[in-house]
Image (cartoon, rainbow over all chains, first blue to last red; front, side):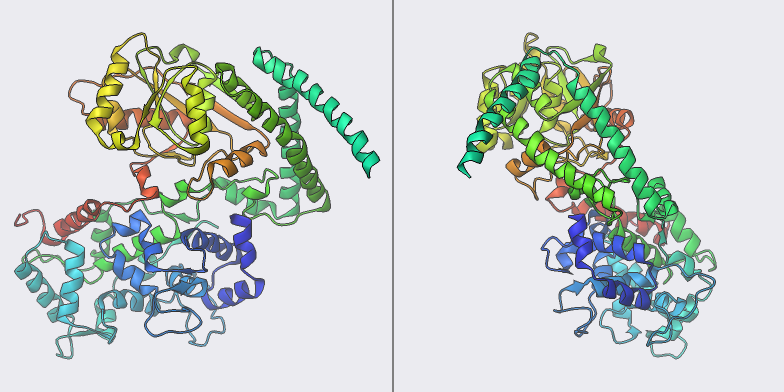
Length: 203
Length: 418
């Protein structure tokens, strides 16, 4: 229930999350309620099934890739107790990428030196949706797989293949037939990423 | 110690007799002594005062903002096509071999994250979040300790609810189970104040009454103002006892669990009942499950294939006095009833809407949607197309395929190969 959930979140935790992500106090408590309501097993962590229970996410063609973004590889003990579970810290850290960028955003003292919702970090989130094996390169194969997820069965293999080839051709500048993060950034330099990858909170 | 009990029991007895005389007898005859009305007025005043205190104590602007919209984020309403067009705005369009940009993925990722933070469906299966607190801990989501007076008031409230209201209601509820008047007692037992609107549209014999579903109490509320034939599964346990009790007052239509799976059998039996014009109107909840009374979800088309006149009814509970929603995955029937009996009261509005029939060229699904919008509009509820069955089941793959198809059109244009 609501009151019990917010009492499980201690003030120190809220402060830490505030520093790391930049969310306000009330946003963090409300997101904690949401986290708690998604957590059907009541064990303080979300599994992939918990995410898939959201119908709108289940019908999103890239739903699985987005869910995957919450589960970073390797176990960083702060965010995941096990590989297939994400705790509230990890949940907030991923959501922080979609926080809107304020004009007067002061840099808080973060270890990485850049806020999680900066343009670069947002682009990195999008890059990782394509980069299936997390090797910092988007290969033709990976691009094909993601394209296939997005279009389903409606486009033939050849057509999809030529779309992938054309995309890599246009983006690739160093000739390795893969798209690196800097090449990806260059392709999207005119896109208003800060606005498109932001969620407007009402409070 | 013994002396205490010796005094206590007679006092208790006198007290209960008083209560029986003052509450149950009038209820049986449908007369009101005005006690409930006074109680409600006092309750309202107290809750208003409590809200004032909370508003004064915490920063008033925060509460005001929250009351403007109870949602967490502002959802983007524009369509897939619009959004992707915007994303591609800055690139030259090459219509030759399909149009795909790496930025297309931004649309899906933002929508996905939005649905993780707040989605239309899963929030319907938990109790509604209140803007102002109604002094029940169970609805306390974001309200902290405000003042001593408020806490004292809450404490008094607990005492009143558990020591006075609860015993009253349990005694009243247990003693008269088997009669049409039992519904009136139940309603009184729950301090139910029901406002019926448009009584001229009340369902008539040989018709089908459809309503939105929030809790088992819906039945009590509707049956207070007319006799209906219920449809449903034979249950075991407490529900089973109640069902068999209800059999004796009006003929109902109960199905065995195995029969429910045979849709034709069910439809046939219902059709026979409806065609017999002397039989009572059937009461059906087409959503199939309890929703939390902020929205109306998909109406299953089965009830609309029977033929006959449909009498839509909209039921809206006032959440200030007590949350009537039954979260069956979280609370059992007994604990739900306990919660109901320890709420302040059940206040609800029932609107009888004009009868509707299936029009020419309209299939059952369209008819169901039409009825659903009428009910949603009257009750001030959100009209959703999602299936209430999503409470327990997974969403169908076909919806994902629809999304994929839409996106493919954007990529290859309208002259796609298939």
